[in-house]
Image (tube, rainbow, N blue to C red; front, side, top):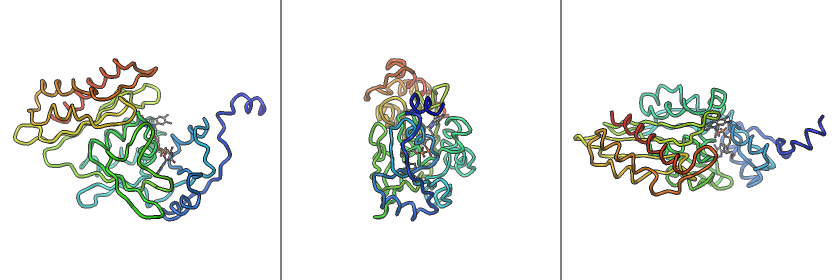
Length: 295
Ligand SMILES: Cc1cc2nc3c(=O)[nH]c(=O)nc-3n(C[C@H](O)[C@H](O)[C@H](O)COP(=O)(O)OP(=O)(O)OC[C@H]3O[C@@H](n4cnc5c(N)ncnc54)[C@H](O)[C@@H]3O)c2cc1C
């Protein structure tokens, strides 16, 4: 039986690796520095473990950060909310502070996967993995979030727009750890919404749209619209943003702005949705997100 399993299903078994549980950020950083590109951070494991089983990744060492208390928190820090990288999707879904100050975060968190995924998967792991269908990248882009990155050499802070660099790729370098996500408080008169059309089994976004709109003097003075699932990486859609900025938030204006979605990107096509269908979904989803963010 074992021989049959190994021969027929060897891609379901990861290559051998060493495992080390880090008890502090400093320990994780020094392990990363010592093992360089041979090491991989393990957080919730909900993206990494499947990748190991498929042998898409073959690290020599896993550094487990899931039980470092100093990486799991949600707190207000002056003009922003600070979220530790190992904070789970469910922590975010249940956060009273975020519900009050940045309700788009719990709204998006509740739409991720199922309860097991939300209990294990982390915000830092999701953004480091940068799946083109993941929900968080769109939310971070639309809320102008910043990503705090540490290594043995020190700390740097990267805006979400510079962090997500392409298909499963980010600004992270070897030896670096995402430690915190900083979300600015919403300006007065601002509402936000995250909407998605989900793949029915995994609940990953076929298309997801995050909209953040500030209204003042009867018009939309500041508009942020970001998509996930629509192209090879999450992106802010400047065409939709410009189409609504300076306009009243009426149904016609919102519908017209949503109709400009996706015109500047290469739209993905796969077995879940053709290019035309995905673009259609993006415009429907954008209208829903903008409507909720303006009423
Ligand atoms: C059945 C299923 C359904 C899902 N549905 C959705 C969904 O609807 N929407 C959605 O957005 N996602 C979904 N996911 C993905 C889920 O959100 C994952 O938890 C997430 O993508 C990865 O987070 P993690 O903590 O599990 O990271 P891991 O799997 O542990 O790590 C992922 C990658 O990030 C790296 N990494 C992890 N933490 C850090 C860090 N702090 N600094 C640097 N690198 C780090 C790892 O080395 C690895 O390369 C689903 C997953 C499954 C299995």
